[in-house]
Amino acid sequence: MAPTLHIATHNIHKGFSQFNRRMVVHELRERLRTLDADIVFLQEVQGLHSGHAEEHDTWPDQPQHEFLAADVWRSTAYGRNVIYEHGHHGNAILSRYPIIASHNQDVTHLRFERRGLLHCAIEIPGLARPLHCVCVHLSLFGRSRRRQFDALASRLEAIVPADAPLVIAGDFNDWRNRAHDLLAERLGLTEVFTDRGGRPQRSFPSSLPLLRLDRIYFRGFDVASADVHFGRPWSRISDHAALSAHLLPLAAG
Image (cartoon, rainbow, N blue to C red; front, top):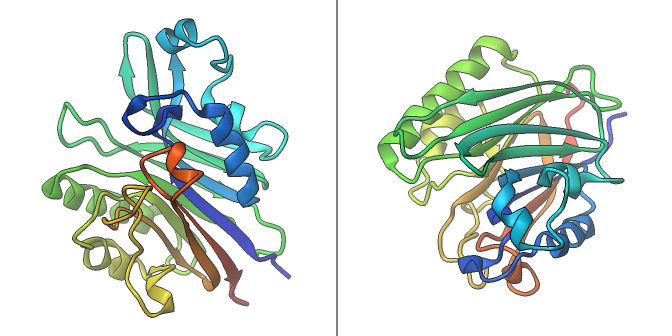
């Protein structure tokens, strides 16, 4: 029998607090571990930043996704999206279970706003087929998001069986909830909070959420529980709240 899966997603703001006031990557690591998630979807992950490394004595020697995963999540994948002279950042997936394949899909629409979608296949005990996971951080602009929804759906339709278990999570920047019509219906997905009779939850800003930016979409599961992690201490870490959900695999998964 497949285990209940605990999923979490968080835009970690490159390891800095809101308005870049403090470097909080160590506090972030401890806070993520309190969630005890099996699979973590992270956005704005700093793969390298030589300037921060020189400025902060406690800046990790490893890429942030490796530092955050150490001794807890044995498999990681990182998709480098934004590259600059002193480093790069992107999306990452941390998993207790083996990541058997990963691919970073470039969905940049505007040259000044580099975006990518990190797609992983993960081997879950008790599941007959790999779980497909996609970590997203979409455009701030509606026209670009529509193109990114289409690009993601087209890729998944081409390479993932229509009944395969799937989780898509991250920072959608989708305050108008267009993802429901443009992505979820097309791929047969449900959002974890919508499944419980409501709408996607407010997640930004993390001190007192007003906008519904972050999501966890799924198929092949039922929702056992879902939570939004906002206010202190989360608001000291990032301007986005973290979302988490316990998902129960369907028998056919």
